[in-house]
Image (tube, helix red, strand yellow):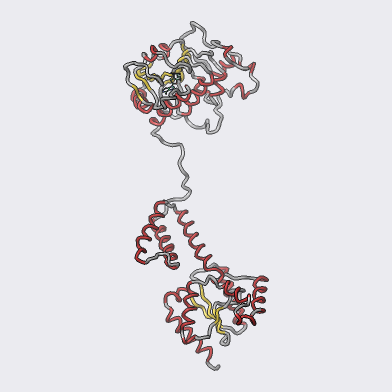
Length: 450
Ligand code: SAH
């Protein structure tokens, strides 16, 4: 065992001088703690400030602050915890009036968790009167009503009250009572004002160090302007409105395509709600890019293999073979190949749907074109077999790899005497009549005797 009740009064001699300051670590050694200690950890850590969140390279904030006066504190652990709470909130000056177990007290050092600078500077007094001699303002903390005609403050009000005198360089004292029975009436009587906490009346007494913590916190909050030590790291700057609007337009265009805005008269209000929903998220630049990417991925994913998605290699070969094998049965409508072909065409692009509908409804093209199953690099979207004419719908934008694949496909087909007609998607959507005219001419051309 280190220091305990047995070492009572060792550091405070009756009749000792008013107060004495001595390096805390030296006092601990002088009191014999070093000889009994089991490990350096138990002995304490000198003046180092270890522990998570402790950074000795940082300056101690210049917030000044009151002097914390503990009247006859009983447990060393509580004194240490008070020092820790004080250090957390930038308070340095601790005064002890007759600590029960003497001073220094190794238990205090242990529970101070590195706030040694506070313990080292602790001043020891024999009487409260001596401890408060230089104070111009004195506040007594208590959980109990002492029946004295004295203003009562909350910790927050206490911080305000102390600010002026502290700024003027005066010494302001905050007194705290013993763990067992708090402050005596005559001790309260020495104070200018009382500080009490808004608490559960059925359980109002705080641990000494926790009471110190609340007061120290309120002081620091006021003195530091409530500035938090760190903020959210934004990682990306805010989204400019232009970027946000481009996203809205893209999103609404895609939603329009899937007929999301129904019924049409609700379109406007739905659009406004949608935009407000995104505004409420306050997305930053990166967030908007992510949202954009999500919409694009969903749109492109939905388009499926018909939009430049190409099966390659052995798998495409096998699939084609399978379809060819079953081609003879296709007319019956029950062939597995046919089901498969349908499945692969399941997600045609908007352009493909429009064009197919136009080609099927237009007398000029009756029975000319067949839809191709999009497997393998050489299959274009629509084929007029006897004319060896293929229609190839080009997506609005496509990655370089898809472009290369398309060029290879064209070369493959041309080498086999096919003609591949490029049909830009936008043209299908914007100028279908002119496009059909062009296809009709191509057909005429292809069918003309050479
Ligand atoms: N049993 C004692 C409380 C001791 S707690 C009593 O009844 O008074 C130790 C010290 O912490 C108190 O003397 C006081 O200084 C402080 N304290 C504890 N609870 C408090 C509260 N609710 N409001 C203000 N100070 C409090």
